[in-house]
Length: 300
Ligand SMILES: NC(=O)c1ccc[n+]([C@@H]2O[C@H](COP(=O)([O-])OP(=O)(O)OC[C@H]3O[C@@H](n4cnc5c(N)ncnc54)[C@H](OP(=O)(O)O)[C@@H]3O)[C@@H](O)[C@H]2O)c1
Image (cartoon, rainbow, N blue to C red; front, side, top):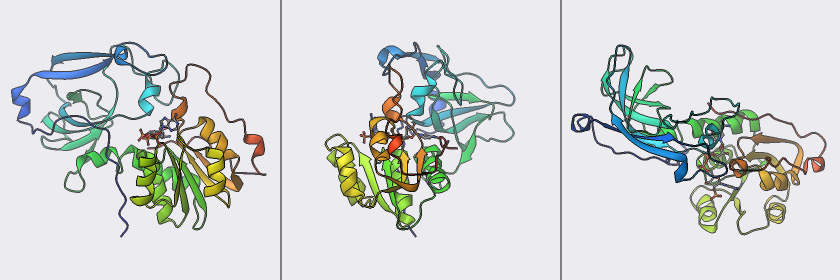
């Protein structure tokens, strides 16, 4: 059996049990104060303390144990049309969460159940069950439901296998390779018998990808010329490019793309804090013949 390294989620929160509920009435919350221009800062947020709400019929109260801080959250701060509505000024910041049900007047959820959902950057959440699913701490540690068994895991798995369609012997390049999605993409590609090259920032991350996760080669985009390093690490060109970062790195990989290659446009983290227009690829004219053009891959 192959064991995948499971990236831990970016979580906060205490691991006290439901008894904590009796010891506090305070809900600690982070709310959106202003829409950031460029990178968010402390000015973006308001910290508030409110009373833990009382539930009514059809509702449940969740004590949030783990919060996932994801790149997509940056997009939710913009007042722009997207796949999901923006977080409104004054609202608790949306975030993926895992927590324990500590009160319930909902027929499908009982006290003691653990649930994953998008219940925000706060210590307690009232829910009517929408978007929640139960998770089992006996099957996997709770943080895994925000990582390898959650949205990043599903994104990497389906993005690579369904959209990227890697075949044994092919060369797969993944950017953001040491991140939650990229680290799984590389490991799945290895399981499928591919040669895997990861692009990441810094020697420590690159060493981890090769030594711990079994990548064949890496490119340290912060200290190497990516275009030159791609020629060296991918002598037979690139068959699948799983793009998490966009911008200049996407542009450089396009120069090494093979005929019939697949490009998975998963994300473009290098562009999310842009204050100017998003950089599109300018090297597309160097693409050979007919690489399969794919739309944006969306995780589940
Ligand atoms: N389409 C979907 O459904 C879906 C779902 C989940 C995630 N995504 C996207 O997938 C990407 C990765 O998500 P994740 O959860 O794996 O994020 P993550 O764990 O936070 O990792 C992101 C990594 O990106 C790298 N990075 C940041 N700025 C960069 C830049 N300017 N240039 C190059 N690399 C940069 C950083 O690593 P280094 O230290 O190596 O720079 C960072 O650790 C994001 O673009 C996200 O929006 C899409």
